[in-house]
Amino acid sequence: MRLNKDSVVPWGCVFKITFPNGKIYVGSDTATTARIDFFKYFGTPVKARDEMHAEMGHFLTSNETYIVKKEILHSQENVKVSEILKIEQQFIKSLKATDSKIGYNR
Image 1 (cartoon, rainbow, N blue to C red):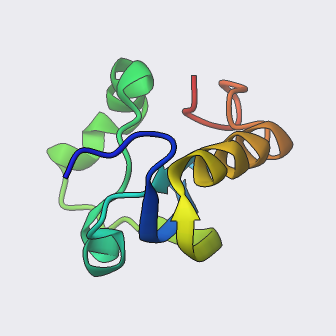
Image 2: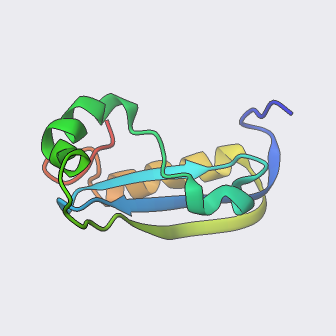
């Protein structure tokens, strides 16, 4: 089933990922399997990929333990995709996640 902004999904959420360097990424999940796949989906900060690799790439080759924290900022059942996307943008703005000193949203 292909979703669009007017699609209603059984469950949608806005989440915040906090990386080991303290920076954040705010994302959303509106896939029809979002509730089932929540623990394995960490967003797709594509525009900041190079920056993330430069700042945290050493974790790929070290034996260091690190923590990536995922928090649900908002969740809702039977919700339009557009509503979740709107709330996601509100959190990106309020948390200043587009500021390169704070987050990875671009």
